[in-house]
Image 1 (cartoon, rainbow, N blue to C red):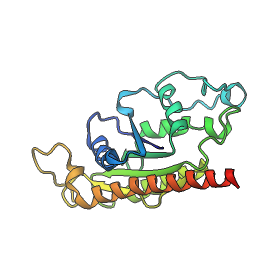
Image 2 (image 1 turned 135 degrees about the horizontal axis):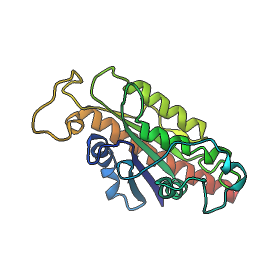
Image 3 (image 1 turned 90 degrees about the vertical axis):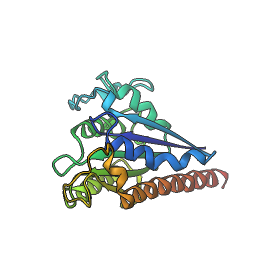
Image 4 (image 1 turned 120 degrees about the vertical axis):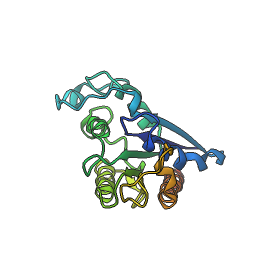
Length: 214
């Protein structure tokens, strides 16, 4: 069984980022060997990392961080997942501040005495949503793929990018709530990134089982 965790990093509830993530994960519903879980940061309060270094010596299997907030739900979900899909809007040429807070708090998997290295070999896929073409989508994808590598994860590659204005030119169609879903190519790239994440997770899982038998 492969577990996919999708995290929507937009502060806007039921917006384009959540819609694109839902659409990208939808093909997995017919795969009986994949379980998909989704977390929306729009419904959670997440503080930034204070770099108090509590996690270096005080972690336990059930207590990841000195702070208690929305991350209490996210930490166990990250551990359960074989592949992690991070979706974010582009805010001033980068990921959302809310997602950045979450990633900063994932420091516990780098320095924590109980959970150090626990994201190693998990697969990572990035989905980004932007209003304007050349408005920071590629940069945001690059940052997220670099983040996966820092945790010892396996990035799927380029990831998915969807525009929320017509042709990325800043024009919107009245009455359409989720413009990102009108970007056919963008939706296709998002679905392909998730498909590849599931595929790589299967390969990693099968490889580790083969090594255990050897």
